[in-house]
Image (cartoon, rainbow, N blue to C red; front, side, top):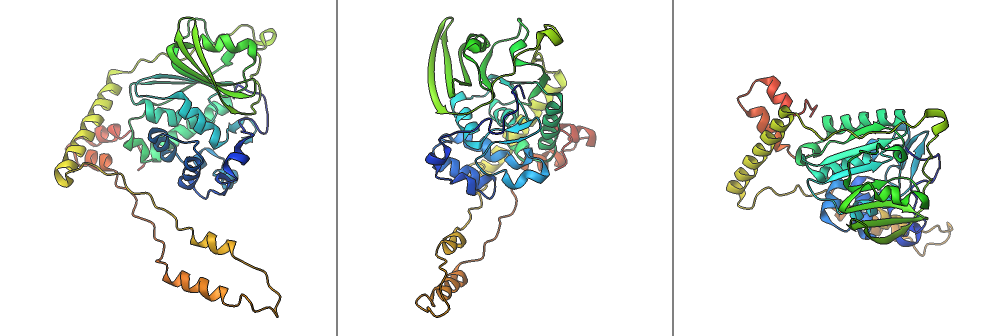
Length: 366
């Protein structure tokens, strides 16, 4: 990332008091999102959908995945993820919409950029600048895994992130301005104006500034509105080392799509419309979202009632029997069938050459 090493970078000091430890008990991605919603970190449906579509654990190294659903920052070498509550507040504050341009300064694993891409849609711009080349390679591997294996890729119109190496304080002077900008490292006060200069009029900048996650909206050429969101602790931006590397400006890639890529986007969009129309004709109300599997929390409630007794004390003898009766009366928990990937099924059923089918599906595994 563009930041110095810091074990708790991207942490929220108010998390424990506000959430009461709820998120740290998450067992999977959906339960993590449920807890973030309950604590009012996730407040809009669009942000909720993006968080549910991408499993946070997919961005962890295998040996650390048991901590993926805790509301904690994670760092291993140069690889870093901020706490889920931080990403929630950032996504809400950015007020993302389809077709906008987004710049992620310190893009890291690409987790946030991929969630943003689900909202921006195919005609948005999604750029990331990252200091460490090994982290860029890691982010590209995770992005490739998401595109190849996740059904969420077909359920959303995705704006694929592009990652470039560099220090975010050395962006080229002719760098484009963006509708939305996020910086994932603590910004010193002397760099505030520089960060603002990356923003279009009407755009939103979210960054840690003076130990506060701060939202800045550019309301005019020289007019700004500032809102402090949350107390946070981030490692500071790494300062450019001009004496060693010279003044090397980083440039973000141009947002130019090939005609072939535009054709694929248009064809996939047309197929999705056909699928929707068929569903309307069949059901009368269009495609319905597959209901999420809700866990019964009976097991946890039983655990909270465990009492340690002396062998001679029989006052709670019937407790175990009552729990067994409750368990016997509770229906067995069964996971629903995985949702059908209608887009994939429709593409594969078309009378097209196989190479074209696979191209339309982005050569995905699923």
